[in-house]
Structures are given as C-alpha cells and as structure tokens.
Length: 442
Image (cartoon, rainbow, N blue to C red; front, side, top):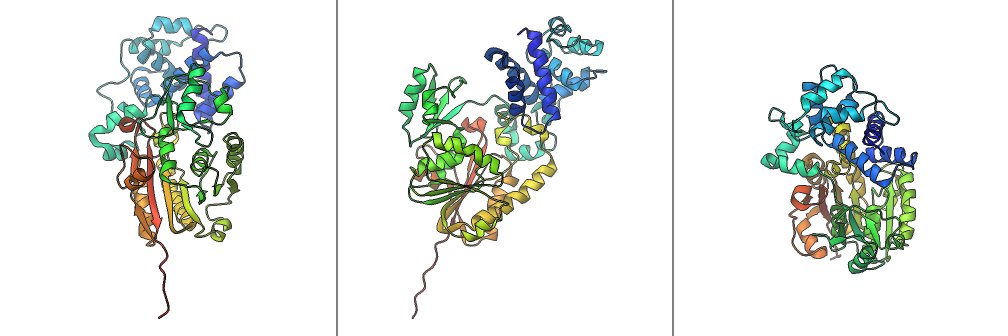
C-alpha cells in the first residue's frame, strides 16, 4: 500500500470507531477481515496511525481548535495533526498523500493545508495545555487521578498512554515456562520471564501466536501479568469448590482451573451467555475438564441463593471503567462518562453483595478490577466489610507470600500500574469469611 492508502484506511477505521459502540480493536479487525489483501506490514502501520490518534486525541483536538480554523472533518483533522506533530510530516508530504488518487484520501481543503503548515515543526504537547489535555485525559477524570497520584500523575499517565507488551501465561497443566520458552524460540520468538508472575512470559516484540504448536496444544495463553497475579492471589487449590463470578470469556477461569490442576469444581458464571460460549474452545485447548459454565439472569440469580455458603473461593473480576487497560483500549477513555462511573459503583456493590453469599465460613472472596479509581477499588472493599461483619480483610501481602512469593508490591491491597510495575493497572482486595463458631450443650 502507498502511504496515502494507509492514511485513507486509518481515516475510514477512525470514522467507524466514532460511529460504533464497539471497542476500537473489534472495529479495526472487522475492517481488515473484509480486506484480506492488506498485508501484515500495512496493517501494523495503519494500526499505529489509528492508535496514535486514539491515545492523543485530547492534545490533537487542542491543536486543531487552536490552529484549525475552518476545518470541517474532525477525523481528518486529527489524522493530519497526528502525522504532523507525532511523525514530523511536512505540509508538502501530506499533500502528496492526500491527492485524491485511487485508494488515497481526498485532496486537502484549504483549511486543512493551513492547519498542516501551522503545525509544522511543533511538538505534540505545549506548555499552555491544561493538565488534563497534556496528559490526554478526559476533563472529568483528571481531578480524580490527580488526587490519587499527585506529582506522579504525568509519569503514570505517560505509561498508561504507551503501547502494552504482549504477556503470556504458561498453563501448568500442560508444562512449564522453560518448555514454553523453548517452543517460542523454535518459532523464532524471543521472550523473557515476567518480573512478578511465576507463570508469565513477556514477548520482546508482538508476534502472531495462533499458528504455533504450543498455542494449539494449550501450553500458553495470552494474559497480562497483572491479571495472572490476581488469579494467583485467589489461592485456588486442587479439590476446592471455586466460583469465577464474572467470568467473561474465561481468561481468569483458565488460570484458576490450572491452579486447581483439574481437581475440584470450578463454576464460571456470567450474565452474558455468549461470553461463556466463547470460553468453551479455550478450555478444551487448555485441557481443562473441571469447569461448569453457568449463565446467570442477574447477579441475584436464584442459583446464588441455592448455593449460598458453598464455595471455598469466590473470584469477582468486576465490571469497571477499565482505566488500567487504556494501553490496549485507548478509545475507552473517550467513551466513559461520570454517569457511567456512578452506575458502575452501584453495580459493583450489588455484585459483591451477591457473590459474598456464596463464600463458605473460612472461605475467601477476591475482588478485582482493572480500574485505578479509589471509588471502584478501596471504597468498595471498605463498604463490603462495613456491610458484612462476618467478613474480614485478608491482607494481599499475606496472600502474595503464600502464593506468588518473592518481592511483594502489595500491602493490605494489591494495586498495580504500568509506570511502577510494568503491568496493566489492576486492583485486588481479598476477604475471608469468619469460620463458624462451634457451640456445645452444657
């Protein structure tokens, strides 16, 4: 593809992303699926242009508002600004790509030409930008994150706004990390062991995995190191009865089942049955046979009441704003609203309250989110204990020593960020239901 054709494809995909409610990666995948003639290198180049716009949309819009008087198409304007500010393209080189030729963008309008000329030689960020814009944050979230991180906000947001690595979890049911490393090396893929997770590998460059024999055999699964650690802290052991209450497509279900070594019972629950259906193939590939998939009508499905106090571990990976995954889903930051957060806080509390009913005396409840906000994390943990006197916090540092071992970044809770730990942003809180007291007749 020519540079102009790549730009045209990026504009088409960004326009579709703005018009759809689906995640950006799904929209891009659909676009490429319908155009199989686009090769791998071209796809990577187009994706880089798309994600540059999604990651830096706030800063790009600031520049367009300042220098783009009369520009009609906001998507084209963002792409022009990104190519000029982030890639250093000149107005002349842009005009050569925006020439209206076959598969290339329409000729630059006069206002677009003026924008490109005014941005030439500029950098993406400017001292006059408000703090939210300079950190590519929605205005409404900046005060919350600034209160959380203070002077470290810039470092945290810069890491959260960069590309994410590709992490793998080794399926202990099928082998160990050394076997996985050998399999990757045989395919010419370089990887290293993760910093914290004893099951993790981090690829030194992104690579297609679906065709690898070790992937087909179920030895490896794609899973960020933070998510691996959350599953490990649950301490799901062989022979236990375990619930993954918000299982989704089954990433943590697979990790929990592997920790149980296929012994015991693991119930994967979700209110979206189609997500559970997608987990079936992954479970078979991983050699997992102790999982029951259970669709729920709501978090208060009658199944929960029937199985009250029946499980050793109940894992809740709650729906959240997903701030910790912005490296992978930068479009999500621009879709979220204060109203979304308010609704999620209520939903998280309802889910936790219902899931807690399943924990047997002496069992544990594990609450996890990929959010950074205190409202979705510590506040929810404290509210659970306040509302349920038979539950007590189980320190994450203690669970870490019992399951992960080694250097521990946890205290009462586990809170991970890309800047500090090189993982997705993640939060884990653990609780133990107090054992039943025995009484004897006098």
